[in-house]
Length: 169
Ligand SMILES: CC(C)(COP(=O)(O)OP(=O)(O)OC[C@H]1O[C@@H](n2cnc3c(N)ncnc32)[C@H](O)[C@@H]1OP(=O)(O)O)[C@@H](O)C(=O)NCCC(=O)NCCS
Image 1 (spheres, rainbow, N blue to C red):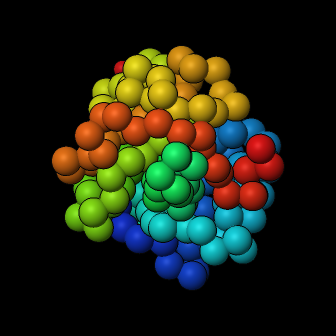
Image 2: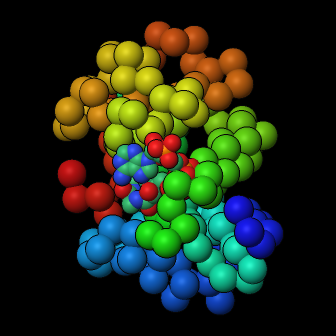
């Protein structure tokens, strides 16, 4: 890749650029609106941007969600959305954002991350639909994937996902 890529935490002056990246990547406003609703709901754990030559070209958001289990509500993390400007896709930027985010979450002792996404893309980061098989969700099983950080939750987590209200599930 030409130029230098920096992955860093979102700052207040990035908000318009983050919106633009999500609109361009998805070709619609829905995900950009979702990001703003999640901020308003105050469930954002981590919002990272990828900056190439001082331009924001990628964004990933991690938010708090829970697993409703017999033993009570277990904290987990939702990865969504992930967006890279169309002209900068397939250069590894999405991967850099995910790796950086997962490292920070692991350092913060988060244990479980869920993603709804392409079954060909997310397993390379350790996400697996097989690991999520005991978790009830409204999504197609092959696209609903789970990743355990650190020592994880022992691989025996059962329950039902509860996403932030902003997702409208
Ligand atoms: C998905 C996305 C974030 C990936 O970012 P990226 O920087 O292009 O990804 P990377 O360069 O790290 O990885 C590239 C790999 O991702 C996969 N990939 C990228 N876009 C993909 C897509 N739309 N469908 C399936 N796989 C895809 C490919 O396997 C690709 O590998 P290849 O180039 O060897 O074929 C980016 O393509 C994007 O913004 N897409 C539109 C929005 C979206 O669909 N977001 C994900 C859902 S939340």
